Image 1: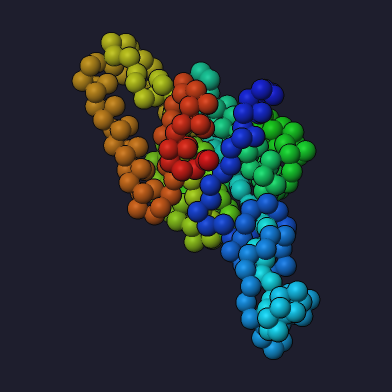
Image 2 (image 1 turned 135 degrees about the vertical axis):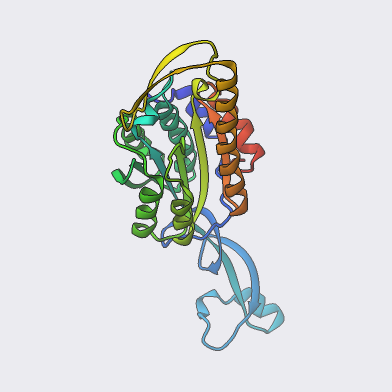
Amino acid sequence: MLLDNSFLRLLEKSELVAKRTQGTHLVGQRRSPRLGGGMEFNDYRQYQRGDDYRYIDWNLYSRLEQLFLKQFVEERDYLVYFLVDHSRSMGYGQPTKLHYAAQLAAALGYIALIKSDRVGSVAFSSCLDAVMRPVKSKNRARSYFDFLAQLEPAGETNVNQALTLFGHKYKQPGLAVVLSDFLDPLGYQQGILALRSAGWQVWLVQILSEQEVAPTPGADLYLIDSETSQAKEVYLSEAAVNAYRQNVEAHCQALARFSKEYGNLYLRITTTDPLEHILFQRLRKERGLK
C-alpha cells in the first residue's frame, strides 16, 4: 500500500487550493462563482421580467411590497489530473523516483477525493501509456491507489509530446499536476504551454534522487543511460562533480523561472524528503494546500 491509514487520516484535514475554481456540470463541494439554484444563499436582487418566479422571496415582498429574487452560490466539483512520468529514468534511486511520485500523487489525490472533487491519472513516457478516468468520492480512493501502485518504469521520456497529447485530448478547466524528473534533452516548455492552452492550471513537481543531485567525487564509474542504453566511463573528480552540480542547478533554475513566468506552482524535491514535509510545509508555503 502506498500510504497507511494513519497518514490518510492526517490528509483529511487538508484541501487543495486551486487558483481558477471553474466548476464542471456536476454538483460537488467546491464553490463556483456562478449564481443559481445551489445550496448556499448568497444575496438578493430585484426581480426582472423573465426571471424564474420560484426564486422570489414572498416573505420579503409582504414587508416591502417589492419583488426580490434569492441568489445562491452553486457548489460544484473540481477536476484534478495527476500526470505521472513513468519513463525508465524514473526507476532510478532508492526509493525510486517513480515510487515517490506515486506516493505524492496518491496523497494529493486523496485530499481531492475527500472534498468530492474528481480525480484522474495518466502515466506517460513519450505518449499516454495508461489512463485512469476520473473517479469521485473517498470510496473510490482504493482504485486510484491501485492504479498508481502498479506503475513500472518503461519507455523513453518525451515530456513535450506526452503533455501536448494530453492537452489536445482533454480540454477543460481543472488542475493538472505533472510529476517528473524533467530530465528530457528535448525540453518541456511546449508541453506545459499546451496544457495551459487547453485550460488547465498547472503544477510542476520535479522529483530527483539524492544521488543525482549530489554524487560523491573520487570514483570511477561506468554510466549507462537508462533510456537510450548509451554508456560512458567517467572519473568523478572534484572538478567534474562541481561542474555536474552546476549543470543540474542551472537546469532546475531554468524550470523554476519558466514556471514563475507562466504562473505555475513549482516544487523541486528529492526522494529523501519526508512526504509530510512536502505536503504540510512546502505545499502550504506555496499556497497549494490549506
